[in-house]
Length: 209
Image 1 (cartoon, rainbow, N blue to C red):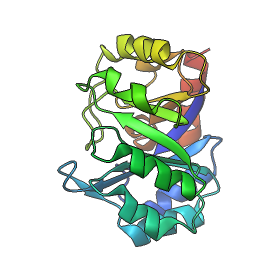
Image 2: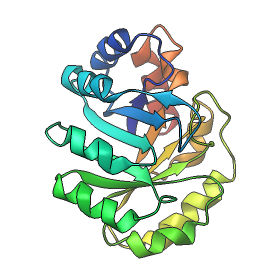
Image 3: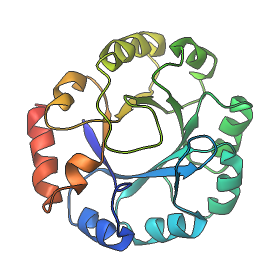
Image 4: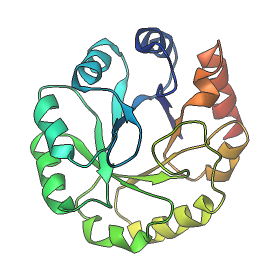
């Protein structure tokens, strides 16, 4: 399992990036929120560009926004590994095509109460499914235990396709044991509330063995 470190709850972006750069986390996870798709806001375009330019990690960006294409147009010269947006939006197919035009890997995120069958029509066109194990929009929430069953059902939907499964929300040294069969764990406050990011990442990796 790979670790994607979310710095959403950090008060200093610069300090968080520096700490993350000194760990072996696989990705830096960006939680981009517009105040409309979810109630909170985070990271304007200039902040996103700053993070990308100053991180030495692959960037795994999760856009909790109503207009992902606006961000695509602003960021098309920047190096993102995954561009993930929500399956609950309209024009999902059009957005997938735009993401591919930018040569980013396509991620679809799904909220805890959304029927997983909505993913079916996009499975041949995406690289990642980000399963939300909390309601999107706020860090520090408790892991929803029903996520485990959703993951298994989504795996069945995927079949033999080469689509990675990521899980985001409430992951810590205890809950990571429930999701040992996924590809990427997005972890925020469990790591960033610590003074030693690497120590927490090491604990997560050892608890997943």
